[in-house]
Length: 426
Image (cartoon, rainbow, N blue to C red):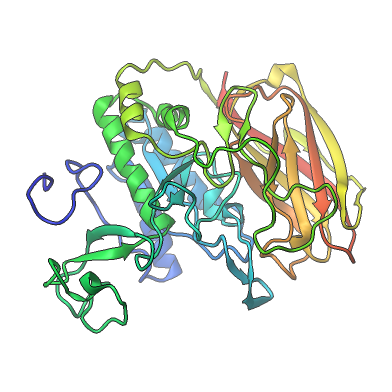
């Protein structure tokens, strides 16, 4: 262990052993090879601090997703590795068609963020509220501390490359933070106080998971996700009204751009910016020590089981009414939900105008894509996939409702098909 040695800072799980893979300096082919190799590696927790720009739309890569499925199926003697993924730092990002103009990104635009195996982590600042850069999305699971930028608001303190001419702490840097330039107790520039982002928040959750597994090594990957969700602490907890568009754009009358906190049909609190809330390590460890699983046997449906195709449902222009469709999931197919994915096709000349909303048989509404987003200038959804955690532990059987809202005048569109895919216990 390197904790409690009187030097620097102490990590969340000081007794954990680390393995590191440098992905960002590699070619795409090399990076993918490293990711695939890690997915079958000898590890308990995989921290995935990477992502793609969220002013474009990518769908899950089947090969990548297959390796992740192997990790949660085979690793840890069949109990599964715990996969922790950064949500992204694109709450404000350059628009797709003009990056000099600020738009709003979404964690659901990154294909690596929308599989049922990963724990997608958003970032909190030092006060416990959503960090200004942190990508929101219905696929966020939990929030960890990522800090702000370290100048006027604290970032994270961590180790850096040794020496004042390498790493983030350098004597020649233009920062006004003396410590960051080798001042005070950082004369060798061994530490930095500007580490931030969801790539910083994800490791705090990975550390929390290591402590949970230390408390109870018999937990499966599903158990860990449940414990994190059950013990998370809602922050900025408001359950009424709605959240306005952060860029102040006009929206159709009666349209709610983002949901406040909701309590779903299974009693879980959820919000797109926080997931189930702030990670509570103490509560999670205590729950792990006495935990008895009640999740049932894991079921993962194949795509195509719940599909409506050949549709021609109009989407009214600039109207909160939206284009609407419903689908019935039979009682025989009922699962206790662990994830819901929507696959959708829509014809529209500018999908950034559109919001995608799903309402469960329990009456829980989830906004999977917020309107007036960063995908400006991209036309049509073509079997694109989005994930929501808002329905966690609800029953899947019953009537599901889809609403697609156009929030800017000038264009109309048509819903042509949509499918639902569930994972959960039975």
